[in-house]
Each structure stands twice: as C-alpha cells, then as structure tokens.
Amino acid sequence: MSTRSAAASNTMTITSTDGSTAATFIPSANLVCSALKYREVDWFDPIRTQEAKASGKDYGISLVHPWAGRLERYGYKVAGQEVTLSVDDDQLPHDNKHGLPIHGVWDRLLSWNAEKRTEQQLDAHLTWAGEKLLSVFPFPHELFVTASIETGRLRVETELRPTGDVGVPVAFGYHAFLRIPDSARSNWTVRLDANERLLLDESGNPSGATTALDRRQFRLEQTNLNDDISGLDSPAQLAFGDGHAAVSMQLEEGFSVAHLFAPQDRDLVSFEPMTAPANALNSGDGLRVVSPGHSFRTVFAIQLRESP
Image 1 (cartoon, rainbow, N blue to C red):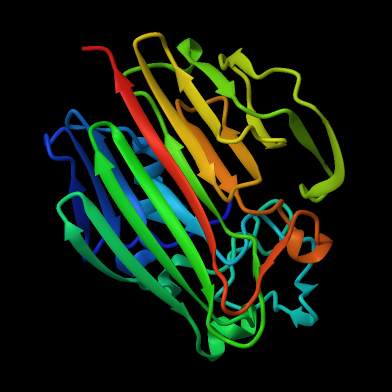
Image 2: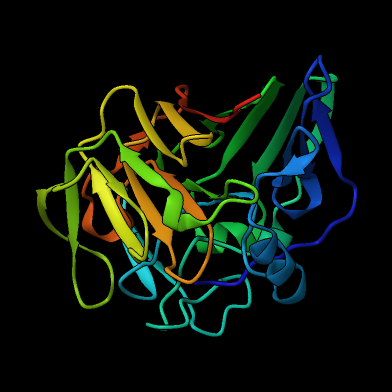
C-alpha cells in the first residue's frame, strides 16, 4: 500500500440531528474523513488510523486523485497529451511492491476550502491549478464535495468541472477502511452487487480480461481480499455484517469498478469505488473525459446498522 499524509489539524465535524452519528473531516489533508462515529463508537479501523498517524498511510475515507490505483509506468498518454512523471518527484506516492506511481498525489498537497452549511452538511472546494499540480496532471479543473449526515448514514457527493479549454480525464476514487466494532472478521458475511472480477497482470494492473464473479455473497473468515470487481449493479451495494450489525456502501452514481481490500490478519474491509479501472490513463479502458462546460458527478453513501 502507498503512504499518504494524515495531518490532523483544522478538523470539521458534521452531526446527525439526533446526535447519534458524526463524521469528522480534515480539509488541509485532502478532506480525509478521519472519524465516522455511530452511537459514540468509531466504525473506522482503529489500527489503520493509528498506523496512518505514525506513518502517513491512507485511512478513514480518503479521496485518491487524480487517479486511483497504480500506473504501469512513470507516465501516461491521454486526451492528446503525453505526460512524463519522475521517480524522484516528491509529490507522488509509490507502490512499495512494484515501485510504480499510485493514487495520484500526496494528501498534503491538496488543501480544500470547506464550510459547514448546517450542522448536518459540509461543502468543500478544491482548485487543481499551479505549476506543480499541472506537471503531474495537466488538466485544470475544480472539485466540489458535499458531505451530509443523518442517523447511521454518511453521503458524499463529488463533482468535477473543467476550468480550462481541454477535457479532463476522470480516474479518481475513494478508499473507506471500515469495521464492525467489537466483532471479528470470522463472523462477517460479505455481499457484493457485482458480476465480474478484473484479471490482473504481473504489475497488479488490470490485464483487460475479466472473469465471472464466482461469489456475490460469502463468509469472510480467513479470505485475503485484494480484488478489482466490475459489472456493478445500478445502483450497487457493497456490504458486510455479522447478523447483529452491518456496514454497507451504496454506489449511487459515477462509479464503474471497485477494489476490495481485506487483509486476512485484520478486522477490516476497505471498499474502494473507482471511476475507471486502475491504469486507465494508459490503457484507456473505461476512461471518461469531461469536456469544458460539462461536469462529472459521483455519489456514494455509507450506512451503519446495529441491533438495538
């Protein structure tokens, strides 16, 4: 996994009207959602959060932008532009296993302007501009995020708008490191509203081939999940539960694939919806380009349920 900034200053918290559910964001660190509490307990994996604060790994709910997943090389050619990246560029996280650029740029480079519209809603804005950012991704644009909360549910809407005279490739995604508090993964049943699994090459990127998803529902137990899935239902739900509590991610709009991460030695599942397959800036597979004057929107929601 890559490492990313986990600075914890200037936090903003939105809270449901009944006070049962709260989400905390850090605008200065790429608007990471650093805590998601329901009935006073954080439903993010605490070990992952602790590691992040010590080493900079991603945690909570993190936006990965301008591309999710790894690239097959230090560069890409897309929308008529050839982009060369440097292995020495300190803006870029690197995949420790393959030594390739992964998940766009470091969180510390992306500081959002954010405000609470109400106690239940946060609006945030990011401008992708300036020499350093455009050297990595030469497509000027803006991102707008609206996060809203109600009892047991966090909804996140993201909109991308080009600001220049060129189209913007859309390849971002999100990570959400989730758990059921005081419950072991051996008790969890996973449900996936998807029909296909992407086959990967030796670099860990999609090869272009797919196979049927053999199980849409299964007991997690000691399964080590590190898979890319496609053929998502519309809308799709990714979920896990133990019979007493459950976590689900509803993919309402804009996402075409998802990565699943659940290391067998940890009580966590990370749902990672993506707007395009990994390495789409090189392969072109499933890549969408937003023309000037238009916009692209994604919506997902995290639902937390617990027996009374």
